[in-house]
Length: 89
Image 1: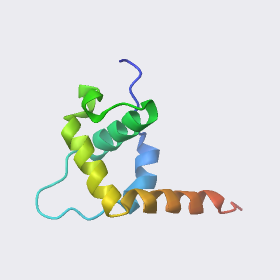
Image 2: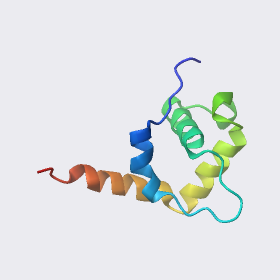
Image 3: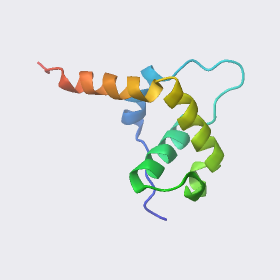
């Protein structure tokens, strides 16, 4: 699969304000994991079918599950939608 999806620096900069604080052990690379989550959802894959370039499928699922349960992804979408609707002068 050469058509892997990777978040750009600009996209990561827009998402980072919504990330929860990391406590204790540092998180696995956010760009890799979030890109993998997006790829899996975009392509309707099972977690175990995620390309290995995104890391272990269990890591992708665990982050998706944990952040979904905490409402992190919902806050990201609401925040991005609100910012997108602002008029630029």
